Length: 304
Length: 278
Image (cartoon, rainbow over all chains, first blue to last red; front, side, top):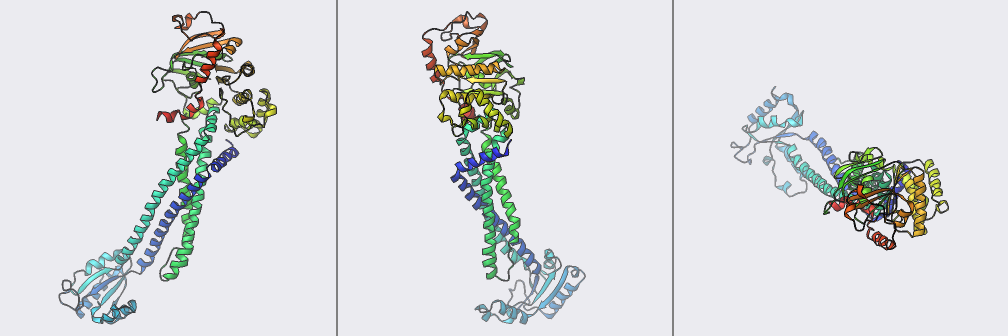
């Protein structure tokens, strides 16, 4: 088999079908950009998880006079309650799991609250005694928060034990859903891209059926007959996936780093480096998909 | 070289078999005419020899290969030992004469050096050396058929199959083509040619196999055209064939009507048969 011959046949096919080739390029561009965005979101979630989970703590909220009476029948937690909670945190049972803990009284809680809600109406209504006194516990392994929760839940004078990660998990599940939605759209688009590729290749084969007939007649091997058509689909899809990689790069460079990172300076966002991981995946997926689609399309012309 | 043993081929949807228990043996170097009306089974037989089709029963041996058993991936290599020409030439209109011939070598992976010597040689042999760079549309019908012959023999096949090669040509041009095919045969290539042209069959006096409704009803060496238009009971078995008929005056007109009827393209069948069945 001669390479020059195969390349020449492929180039002819691409020239004859320019508009269809452009549509393949566009569909793969759009669908793989979706795939790339979904991957970016996953990277973003992983990155935010490792950042925030590292800082997340378990809060042991003590009762106040305004706490709901179901959890706190005795009202404001007494000094005894505070001592017993602290002793329990120091006990040999819990100590090995805890990295450090600190106590936040009404006054400190009020200061933090005023900072967080600065300028908002609620900051004016809240009084220090309404805010819980809290033991903030930092665990050695954030996944073991159940130990603290189980030890202090239902203890007299403790209103609630709360793992901060449960708030974060809500955010992450929203991001995750967005990423899944992007993948869903991408799968649909990839499906239509592969149908488009096989239709195009079939048309290309149809327009060259004289050549195909003669090739079969004189005994060209199936591989020689197939290859120009498969390469035709692969070349078009590769152009599309390279453009999609460029689009993903542009999203990271101009939207994430250029806009989001400026707007939300305390959040860590994915960098351009991640594109170096995503781009080969997109190009690989484009090549694989188009090779399979065009190979399947041309197969029925090869029955002997 | 070619051995066909009790072969039956039934196409789906047809009410009678295209070939009905046909047996035929063709030796190396033979020149065989297949004659018979349209639908008599000539093309079906050629398709079986080229392994375009597989018989429903019986066996086909060509060049030592059992074509019922040969695996699909070996079929292309088998076909490289066969040459084939058609009534409608089957040239690629966008390629020049030389490119048309070279194409058949390129696709089977012959080296550039081989192509550069083989193509001018074969074009010289068919007498078209001076038209190597013309497009098929610039050639006469006879010249186009010579290009097709050049393409069929450039890879030195053991067998040349010709499906009505003179069907679209005037008598004088047909003579030229037949002289060329005779030369190819004289060089050792086995020739199997389906034809309606009585004049040619009568003049060449080669082996004539007559097919009618899927049966071989006559197989005579060194013969002229055998009349099969109204088969008599005596034609039922090949052994009882009487003396070959000699050319008669009104036959030429029949020849032309039959030719027009058989215009459905062989190769289009080859390409689209699978789709038609689905």
